[in-house]
Length: 411
Image 1 (spheres, rainbow, N blue to C red):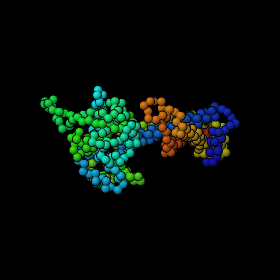
Image 2: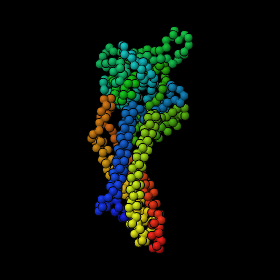
Image 3: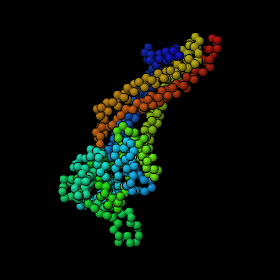
Image 4: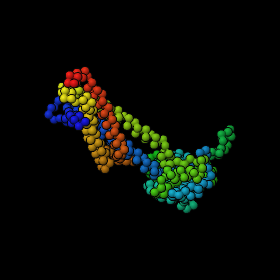
């Protein structure tokens, strides 16, 4: 094995002769290096985007969300059971549904989310306020906090003492019939804006917050909620808490962890990352064709050397290993240079943000990036596997009759 490895390294890194074979060796190393570096960088960008999305949704979504399996609304009676689970920090009853907001001639359809006092203990929305205060319980008025997108579409002014936003909610208890035109199919209330939050465009354009009892009156759902939002104490595993809550409240409720609340989004992210693995594996496989052609040409060019080795009693298996080691050495050289380039470029982008997004609506100035050593490990494993595979077929050329005749004469 040492002899095979020594000869393979001489073939790859020899400086005595500058031939087309040497050029092809360096070209193979360069192509694998570029493929490896590109795969590391692209996967790191995906990791950065995923972590950015998670951080954005964590500013809005709870650690655990509880919904009824059959009914959209249910009685607000199990809050104490949930609170009794060790590790639960806050439990907030929530009533959420679509409404029509109107301010003079401006209108917008969005979700009105009614929250109780326990929700106010969380700082998620409070920490994202850009105007006013999260004072939905202030005074006797029906106050609300709006997303920044709703502010612009409705023309909201938080510093006005006289501006009230009309809220229209359809009554789901009314049934369609010929006399529907004689019935009042909606309920109207007014809300005073006290604050504006900004998290991300999809939330800012679609949500406003008000008191739970106000939304219960508006939707005719007294003493009902549409979900519970649970925050877990630091140091506790949300997945374990989720299982314990399920055991306490029974099977008629869905207890959703953070990723399950946005299941379709996380499925898309995982699918896209899998596609990246597949596409770049194909690119690396195509790059390995250089190794295949290199070793095939090497087998022809070094036929005299092979005959000489056979005449000295070197076995065919050892000669095969020369070609296999040659392919592995090219792959390893590509991995070293590619990993250096990929990790280096990722770190530069992570700390200095050289590549900008250049979109006015973006929440980030530059592309987010985060290195994941599991991705680097799988990238290296793919390159090694591809290099070995590309080396096996040319190594079988050593079974030609000319080489076998040399071995028979010496035996």
